[in-house]
Length: 71
Ligand code: FES
Image (cartoon, rainbow, N blue to C red; front, top):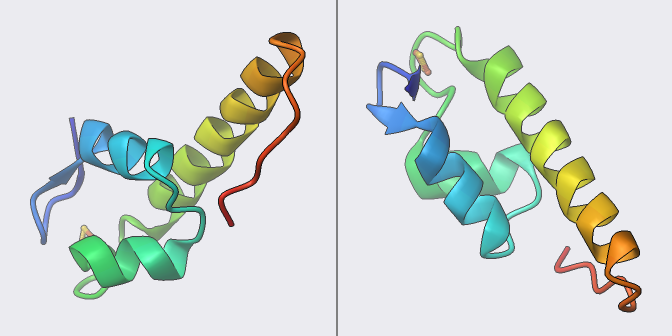
């Protein structure tokens, strides 16, 4: 699903970027340009980022591995 229509960026692209170590909206902006045109996607981008980072944190805690934050 498109999150940022202006830049044609999907939720899967954003999730993949987070999995690869992106952890701030600024970094997403630098990589994809999300939020740089109309700005309507900013809230959804923040929710995706927060939810996906929280998921990663839970998965790391559940696997009993030390939490390595890429940020
Ligand atoms: S929808 Fe993302 S900048 Fe317009």
